[in-house]
Image (cartoon, rainbow, N blue to C red):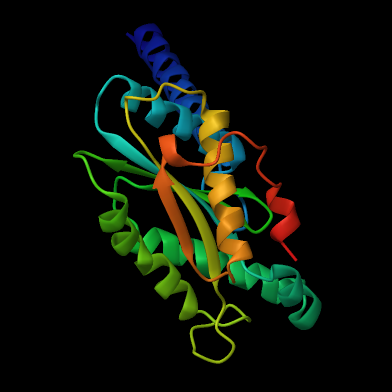
Length: 217
């Protein structure tokens, strides 16, 4: 009997070790896919989510709005208030996107002060209707000041470029990215603090979109 009890204890200990390793691996996978500063999905995880959503759209399972979001004049925040306050602005923007987004929406930090939004849509929607629905993100940004705190003093703003994607246009995600990026450039050129949205088919896809880094200053 004593021998059987010992074997039982060994099996239980082995099971505990396997469970612990599984939990540690799960935590590691989460860390690898998460932006440390904001807690949002990082670039790798965001691109995976984007590819997954586009695959669903290609199969005719709804539409999606893809947003490229840039914090306006972020270099001025870092230069004027310091990098710690710049980090506070990024964290506040990430929390605002999470709070105002739906449960099905995915927001990720793409690079620096750039975020990406992936918003599934179950039914057809016009650009005009979606434009009004997405205005909440620009409104939410203005409630955050340039130190990352809530307040109207020196409100922080966002420029957003987006495209509505449906199953009628089968293109790689890089083309979707460039189209949203091109609309972001339009928002920047037209004075910032605004959203430029179009259907993917109508977006400027011919000329290469300016790099987001150009608009970080």
